[in-house]
Structures are given as C-alpha cells and as structure tokens.
Image (cartoon, rainbow, N blue to C red; front, top):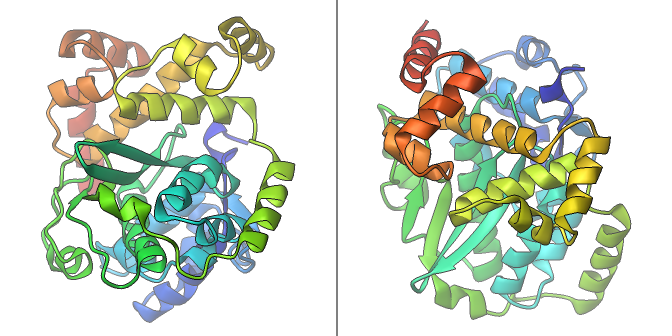
Length: 338
C-alpha cells in the first residue's frame, strides 16, 4: 500500500457524501471508484477509509458537480454527534474550554491524517485544523469542510448565538465567496497560513449545557483503552503542532510525547526512519499545500515551516522535490487548470 494510503479516517459524517453528490447532480459510484474507494466504503459511520482517498473524493466531487465549494456544503451538515466516541468526549465536557482541549487531545481517534489545534493569545482563541500526512489530496475541500463543521461544533457547545470573529482558510480566494459569507457571517481571510476560526477567549469559560459527567467518565475510559496510535503518526502530529506554535525541535517533540529524546530516536530508528526524515515529510507536505492551494508569499511559507529565511527553505525544497518552490507552484497550478 502506498505510504499516503496508510493513514485512515473514521467515516463518520463522510457517510453522507454519496447522497450529497447525488443531490448536486452527479453519480457517486464512478467518483468513489476513481478515489480508490469500494462502493460500500462509506456505508458504516464507524468504519474507516484512507484519509487521502477521502480527499480525492471531495476534490473530484467538486469538479464533477461543478460546485467549487463542495467541501463547505459537506461540512455544514456535520455535528458533534457525527464524531462518535470523540463527539461524546467533547459534548459532555464541563466547559467549552475543556471540550475543545479534549477535541485536540483525542482527535487522533478519528483521523490519522490531520489534527485539531487550539491556540490562545491576546484574548482570542484559534480553533483550527492542520493536515500533516504526506500525499494528502483535496486539501482545499478538506479545510473548507472542517471549518464549516467547526462552526457547527461551536454552536453545539455554545448555542446558536456563537459566531467567529475571523476565519482563516489556506486556499486561494475563490471566484464566488457568497457561500462562505453566508455560512461564517463574515468574509474569511483567504491565502492564510493556517486553517482556523477565531473567537473571543471568554467563550472558553462557558459551561456546556446538558453535559453528563457519567457519560464523560465512560467515554474517557473507552478512549484510554484505544491508546494514542502508531508512533510515527504521533510524531507527525506533534511536529505539525509545534510548527503551528512557531518552533520545532527534537527535544520539544520528545517532551510533547512524554519521552526522552534518545528514546524517541531509538524508537524511530526501529521504525526505519529518523526524526529529521519525519520532520522533512511534514514540512514538505505543508509546503506543497500552501504552494498549490494559495498565493502565500515564499517568505511566509518559509516562516510557517520554521525556517529563518527563504533561502534555507528553497534549498530544503529543492532537496525534497528536485525543483524550486516557484517552479513547483507553477506546475501545480497548470495541472489544476487542465
């Protein structure tokens, strides 16, 4: 199996995609096949499907249905209940802050290709999502869907009066922005370095109405029994989060995983890789997403990846890809427009 097919995603709300494709005037069967999914791959919400294949499905569905904001429409129907055990953990947390921290800690239960993150600074909070797995496809649609879902999740927790103060999307500004304004009630900031909804910090202290402590205890026991996933996926998640926080090192990653740096190196060696190789994979994936899906300047891409300037980033990118970031971006745009 190709490396980019090893990461899986709990089906959950993706089960609604075939019906949505039908509603938008296309046959889902050939799209499922083209994405590498079996006809019944999305039938069971508790099933799992390749993360990359779901991205391909949303990407191709956007083209086939002539609906460039397909992901946004898909995400509008997602709610906490669609997250299964993860949704149970979040929904029955005592406060919104605890609920969102729980979402970020246990989100790996649903996805091995992307992570939820929560960043607090200056009286505001960014709740976001970052795809880290190599070879991800359809990232623009994925990010649209997750941000639409994030609005629903926050309203599930806070009530219908909640609204974001800002929305950031790491994608080129689409020709039609009305669907985004209709959902978010504000104009998103396109060509952003991150994917997130921003809101005032005061919301974190709000109690979650109807939270049941007994159900939360049961859900926590079930989550602990499932563990934290494979080591390399844990390292990828940790590195992507560290990049979002503004810096990355082996010691920081080891500390985040509650192990000594030498232990981390030894365990990665046993998996046939090294810390630097995993870091390069994560950086290369983020670089490809930003270069292909947005018009973010190379200086900003370099800073997002933790480089001190554009020159070291360009040297690293040439080592990873055999070409320059600018040339890679032009070729990616040419392919997308064919």
